Image 1 (tube, rainbow, N blue to C red):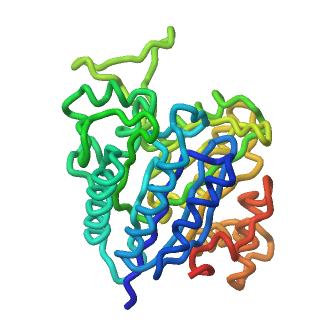
Image 2: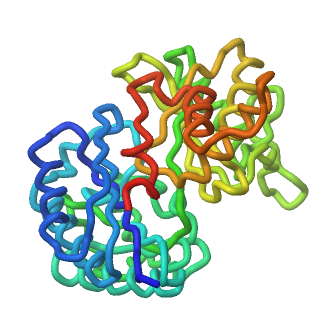
Length: 344
């Protein structure tokens, strides 16, 4: 079996095409690596890049891309809707075939050590590469974002895993690690009010939300700890954002285990909560790539709602998924460019 690793770095630039093209080209120049997709978002001011290849080659491509980002992106001037720590925000390594999660965690360590040494950028490890329990969750590391890094470095418990606790104003810090296949999935609402989108996000995300009293103050238990109301979906992270280009709010979701909570389940749950607020989920988008299985699961689900819910071909199920999830609402959804199996 061929050893194949996927890497999905996120860069804090979604508007300057020259910079985005430069990052992509730095990946293309590395042998034994295939660049699968580059998806910039002007509102998030962020680009999600996906490539696959041999383990060592993928690490080299990730480093070269990060080096280009460090040269061309200035975080002192960066503004965008999505949380971020640095010019290269997060670099996950994902096992595809012939490699284990432990193998990918070792790749993350190798990458982090080199980036900290050669680029002078503080590096944190998350998910399966995390060395401390509180660093497993990406959101914990990102707390305070780029603007809070200088203060964060004063706290010994937030010393980087690699590199010095010294604020790099231009590049910030970067998080790297190993994880399972994650689907970045956004559900569109028929409102521009991002606070309503965030309310829905709080209701569905696994980490839930604090319980509040009639005055809106967080309630605490007898130990003085906040009482948390669990979210309705497992393996889901979510927040509400404004998508200015379409003048709509989105529930921005990370499906960290799509087999436990697939896109159609997230879409239907968002729509259910939206209706309690007088809203509708009008469509959705997948940022980056998706496994074919996720679309087939959605196709089967939406097929069961139709009168002719018999046996369908793969293409028919994909079409049903695209229709049911409203994946072409913002721009045409092309499975040949979005499904990882069709690109390998």
